Length: 163
Image 1 (cartoon, rainbow, N blue to C red):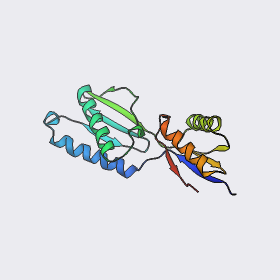
Image 2 (cartoon, rainbow, N blue to C red):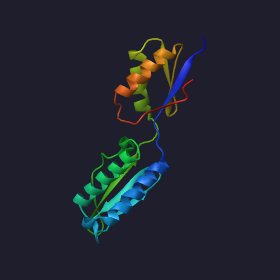
Image 3 (cartoon, rainbow, N blue to C red):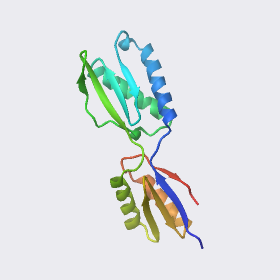
Image 4 (cartoon, one colour):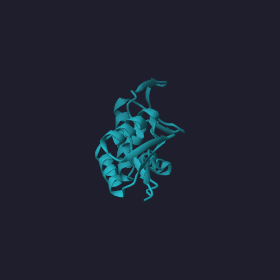
């Protein structure tokens, strides 16, 4: 019998992120606490840069962005919020939020090790920014899928090319 397989990737719909940011900007325009308060959101290739008047407004903006991501069914882990606020010009604060896309080598090795040690008759191989999981049994692959969904690796995972 031929091997069955699927791929594990970590990616997100960039257009949905753009839509969530547009909704955030629109809602901030209506809020009284942001009336005459300067703020800026710039989506770059690998990061989102937010600039606000103070730490309180920065927290309000990031909370609103996260709420909009959830409403648009995007995983909030696509934004790496671990960075601190930094002082910017004009008595404002700036936060650089990295966009998480693709599996780095460290995460790929962690996931691959979890699969290879936790499941029998399954082979996981790293192929760039994705992992190919193969087995002769589709039932075993279903068990691997369930195990991966139950465990949190700190990055959003999607499963593609199920054959």
